[in-house]
Image 1 (spheres, rainbow, N blue to C red):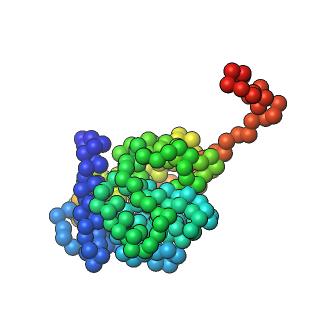
Image 2 (spheres, rainbow, N blue to C red):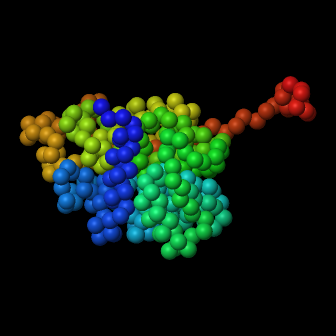
Image 3 (cartoon, one colour):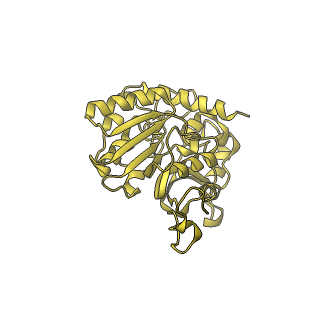
Length: 296
């Protein structure tokens, strides 16, 4: 079994290679995906999300790595501090900046140095002075408590080995009353083992995914409230991908239609959740009346 650090190394190496590709060679887990094993040509997986319709979209920063549009649902306001987890080449940060404006601040966090370099170059080219990119691990963010009004993330949490710790860290950096909007890949029903465990698909946003109910439970256990699925759609894997992992009989069984209660598949979801606001201390409470370091 791979350790957490081994998984992170696989992800870092794969995304580092993606960051160094030219725009024409774009490759990720989006519509130009190269997720199949031992392949040099793109295998189309239906994760296209329509970024080019959003204000702030920058084609040079879109590496086809997303599975949703978290910034579209994130309720970002002018002046907000926004943190993008797994910011890649900066696309979601630049879309967020279009919402938060000159008075806001956008911080992208990524653990792949080549992605940080590419994102910083994009921001410099665009002349943005209120967008910055920080190297760091989502499970141990080098960011202060109560920093962000909004956190966004796009097809990244599923790649994190310790998702519970990642959500705990997300809770920590959000201001009381702040919220996140995260697009991610989740599972419903059990995937065939060969499909689930493959390292290439791990970086292709599938094998790192967990069951939807378990995902939402980890969000709740981190302390979040008002947990809502803002959007959900099934991701179709073409036969060209499935044939790398499954026999013809296994493909037929995988595609067998099931009812809603027993359906099986891979889904893109955009999840909203809020950090509770701090409770106002009642004026009649002993702590409210405390006037010095030695009282109460």
